Length: 260
Image (cartoon, rainbow, N blue to C red; front, top):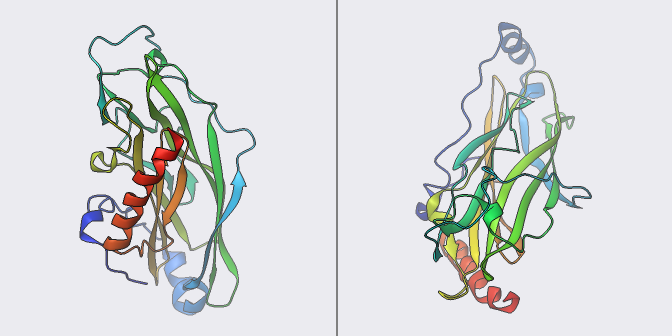
C-alpha cells in the first residue's frame, strides 16, 4: 500500500528501514508460491495492549549530578538519539539503556541534575499481519517507554528516556521485519509558557515488512508531553493529513494547559 507523505512530516519520515537481503531458497520458494509470501496489508493490526506493568528504568546518561551552569528553560532540546534501530531483519538490536530521546532545557547536560521525575511509564502494543492465505506471518510486541515530570529548580515539565523496547518478535520464514525510531529536532516544542515550560515531542516508529515479492512500509506517530500526556496520532500507514496533524498538535498545545 502506497500513501502520500505530508510535506511537513517529510523529515520525520525520511529514515525508512533499509532493504533486506534474501537467500536463494527464499526467492525460489516465493516463485513457487507467491501468495504465501504476499502480505495482506488489510490484515495488519496494531493493538494497544495496555500499560506496562514493570517498565524498564533507564539511568541518567552521565550521572554527573549537581547544577548545570547555564540553563534556558524554554529552549527545549534532545540531547539523546535522533534516529535509532529497534529491530533489524527479525532481530532486536536496541539497547534501551543508551538509545533513547530526551526533551530537556537547553544547557542541561544530564537529567539527574533535575528533580521531580515520575516513575517510568510504558504502553505495550501488538502488531500482527497475515499473508494472502490468511495465515499469521508477523507477530510483534513492543513497548513505548518514557519518563516525564522532571523540573529544573522547580520549573517546567520535561521528558527523558523516550524509547521503544521490543518484547516479542515472531516472523515467518521468508518475511523480514525491521523497525526504527526517530525523533527529529523539529518535533520538539514547548506547549507551556516561557516561565513554566512543558516539553513535548512527536516520536515516529517506522516499520517495514519485506518478502522477495512484496515490500510494505508503515509508521506510527506518538505525541508525548512532560506532564504525562501520551497519544498515538498516526498509523499504521502514516495516513494523517497535514491539516489533521496540525490540528492535532494545536489541540494538544491547548489541552496541555489543563495539566499545569
